[in-house]
Length: 400
Image (cartoon, rainbow, N blue to C red; front, top):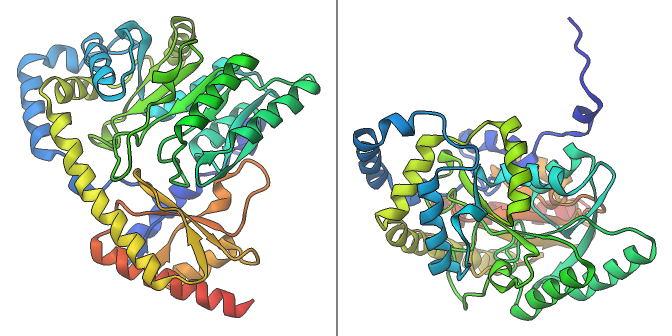
């Protein structure tokens, strides 16, 4: 049979990052491509004990369908955690549990925007949001970044220009803390400026904060949500980076009107997120394990970040890169005449993989860029991988 697929599917491309995961298991390959947490950060023994307790005390509920908007006990624990961790004052009814935060990145554009509408994103930005926008037929306007993340003065000019043309974006999407892919962090003055602009132009803000707990240096900054006094910000979080990504538990914090629409849409997406994973997350917070595990993860990832940065300083002369204070990634810029996508075949031949920077742009990609992950590889592979990458760049430059 010859199948006929919808026009929407023609616009959806497989994620380059997902495709790169196949290289991880090639013999001798070192991959900086995936966004994988390190298995050393998984609290295996603690989760085993939690599972034992759940099977003894909550088995009938944990293995049953749950409420669409999430486990009430977990939402109560999350409200307390967000208050202590991020100074976000939120009632449990303002939290909706999701199947990873990617579910929210798919749902929120459908809630806020119609096909053909515009939204604002950073350039570059997270591929998960870009793929959701493409799937929904939603267009974007991009705002440039420097070492201090989104340039909000440029955002202001963009909004003025769009308004003069009778166009208003439906939301602003940002990852202000340890941005993916670039690793940049937005300073306090720009955070306040962004919120002022959102209020002035009456535009919702989606703050994606999957890495906020993973700070290795520098001073902690307030989230946009904690600074928001006008209910402009919808906040996304996840347990993927601070517990285990395979459990697929995320959460959205927003106003009841937004979550009401989300709840209706979620009924069509999955009825309810995994009950067992929600009970695990509930016990993870309730027993205080989260407060012990995050410092261990920070110690592990700080060491790996420092190893990669030191190796880049020692080995790389034909590029510049970000120096993230936290998160999982750094951003490399090659000479303007180089193309990281064209260079990828040479890199694979040299047994080193990365994600090309062009994958993180909706429009007008910078082809001389790449994203490197430093959390997954062993310490020795971080050093050797940077050597292979430097060798690849040198060979590519000589071939031009």
